[in-house]
Length: 195
Figure 1 (spheres, rainbow, N blue to C red):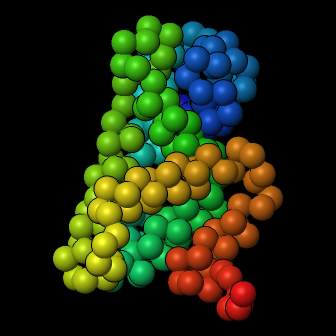
Figure 2: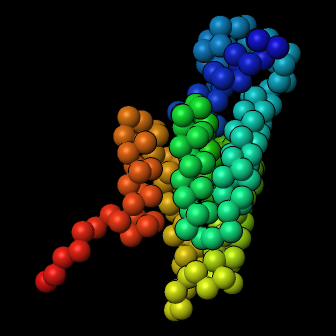
């Protein structure tokens, strides 16, 4: 069990850094201090390791979304919860957040790309989550009249993708980025000025 966990941790970190295409079985073996045959024994193939690592990351993400987003009814509270999902996962293991970002980017690749990763539904899961949040907010009158529903969905989707990719660029600034996003959500980012 410890060997499998070590392989999973190394694979998650490597896939988060380099994507599916950029990781070899030998690299996973070296990073987890095992022989490549051990990886084949536990996972069968590179795709098996990738699937296991991504499934684990997505399950953690889904658990935190249920716990921190959908426990609230109002749109502002759900958006605060969404920010807390990323904070919780980042505090637990920054590679969880980074791997979700890589999955989101790779989910945009053409499905017929033979060099691409195995198909995954990460992008669709995120879109569905955001659609539910936006549609509920619209139904409760929490979104101003005239705001385009699809525009709101795409903006929040882009923010989610950015939050997932941000730990790859500047890990030390990530908690502050989440704080600033919270200020933006609550209209507290900019000071009132007059022209």
